[in-house]
Amino acid sequence: MTTAEPGLQDAYTAPNFATSALIVIDVQRDFLSEASYGVPGTTEILPALRRSVSTFRTAGRPVVHVVRLYEEGGGNADLVRRRLLEWGVRIAAPGTPGSEPADGLLPEGASALDPELLLSGRPQRLGPYDHAVFKPRWGAIYRTCLEELLGKLGVDTLVFAGCNLPNCPRASIVQASERDFRVALVRDAVSPVTDSAWTELAGIGVGILDTAALEALLAEPEAQAD
Image 1 (cartoon, rainbow, N blue to C red):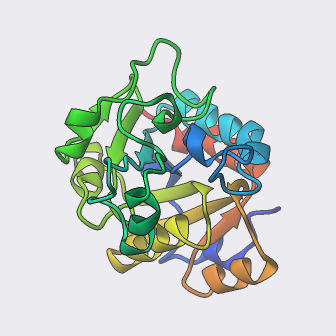
Image 2 (image 1 turned 180 degrees about the vertical axis):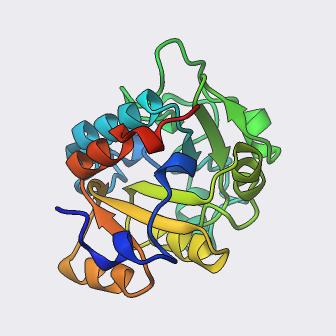
């Protein structure tokens, strides 16, 4: 992947990596490929996702882990999920191991997720560069504190990764685009994908790149935090 793609070159949409944040969507243990209600392909992207997270930390840039926390009975879930949760299925239940981010994504020494804090609509600080935000619906901005957090961090560019691309990353990307954030997607750190997804996302100005290109771009001096 080169930086010649239109979404990475256009003056209005090209990412500003010096003012960027990595947004990791729903990469929690209960959504890994091998889990009962997991998303196919998610475990397989973990090596690339860990590289992406490490690249942002090395550059001194923020990493935001956007998570789901389904309360017992599903009262805070999307309508399409409520029947399943009403039946007693527990997925990403607050305080359970399955709700935690996948191994290797959080910084060393990070605390467990704080369900009370996150469900109250506040961000949780997980390290010098890492934060967690709870989202109650597909998109990461609707009814969340993410946009306020990004404003405080001086971010105008969002680089997305995670699962499940047809649902939550896609909804989050559209919400970000509607708010005039510059948007990019790490193609080998998102699951699952289809060929049509790249064309559709490029059509709304999303820059598509892989982890190797991301590492090179964030290593450039102008992309480093002061």
